[in-house]
Figure 1 (tube, rainbow, N blue to C red):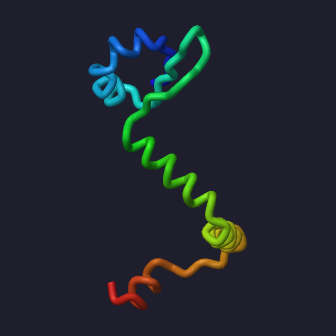
Figure 2 (cartoon, helix red, strand yellow):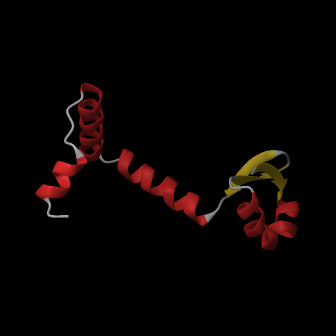
Length: 89
């Protein structure tokens, strides 16, 4: 769900938004005088965004992520069965 609501409309819909998000996930843009001033979104989406921002803000993690993607691209992978055996899973 992505829709724009005025502040007064958002106030009136606040208690029903959790159920709306269950039916159609997304976010709501709250506007004042037609301009966006805030967003309302499900907690899970908020947590996901914050985790993504944290990862993207960490140069070391981003370097490791890029290296892993490059390994995948070049086929430098270890079969899952071998990993399970090495880790005694």
